[in-house]
Image: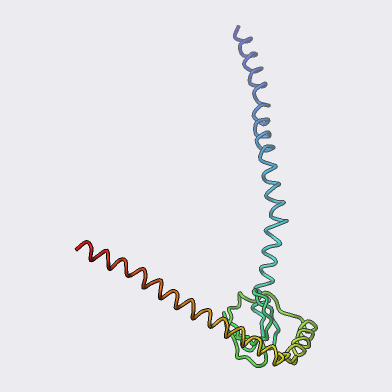
Length: 177
């Protein structure tokens, strides 16, 4: 009887042993898709974003006077002076400099783009504003006079309305006394 009990226990133990690796293996297999998803997201999203951020930081640290830049707001200007955290930018030849933070620089234009922009800006700056014909100016002055007359009439009406509103209140106060 002892022998048969020992054999039965050995069979039970042998049958139980494969289950232990099987449960560990099944747990690993259930976690494996999550691990793979994280790895894929790292290589598709996180790593390229960090690489792009390093390139932008390097571009901002390499700014020098004379560079043509595009700000985050879309303004195009020329760098006059660079400090640790700020840059001094001129947006047109006739204007004074503007102080910007380095993080507001979106990109640095290459020489070809800068020349094209400079050429186009000189064209637009040289354009004359067309003058309005004198007959149009007279038409506007007549319209302006009419509008001013209407405004004065409206102000007079407003004053009359306020006087009317005040009168009954005074009479009511006298009647209650």
